[in-house]
Image (cartoon, helix red, strand yellow):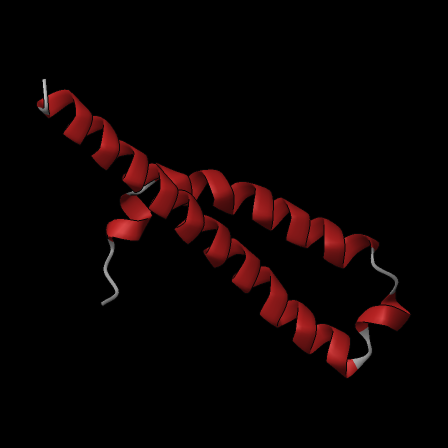
Length: 77
């Protein structure tokens, strides 16, 4: 199920850096009275990883699909 192949994928590292920067900026610039609300903190902890992993898997799916189509079309010559 889970493997270390994800860490070898360049897409993972390309997405991780911007998401971490956005997360730090969100924490730094969001007013404390908003972050102190329990539902905002819980929602943020749910939303950021969900956005990251859904973006990663969508990118991986469509990238791999394009590679398969390119290989199939070139082998059909």
